[in-house]
Image 1 (cartoon, rainbow, N blue to C red):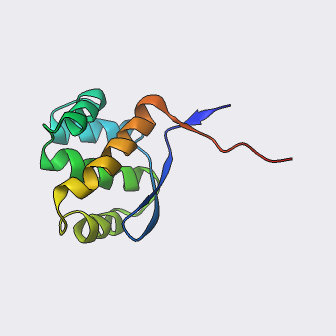
Image 2 (spheres, rainbow, N blue to C red):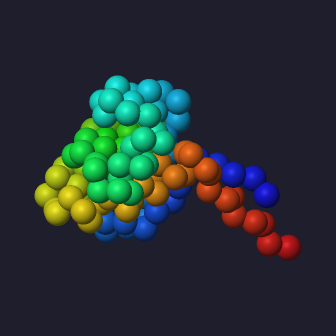
Length: 109
């Protein structure tokens, strides 16, 4: 069994892939003035800030390979225009993937 920080999540209008690599994590820390564990806790205890949600998702899309403009368009469409609490669980799942990993699918026989 191996683990990855790449998370495929059913959200918004389809399935999206998110990944926070080292570069994205550093940008996220800078934008949110907090490390990934602290952000994860804020998203869980309700003390999150707007950029905790928005930037986690935007940078997660970019880290998984989406072009920056397409990622921004997705965030504008699916995050900026809906109630903020709708996206908190997804942002938290993206951070959980980088903190504890996601199990790779097991191959069948």
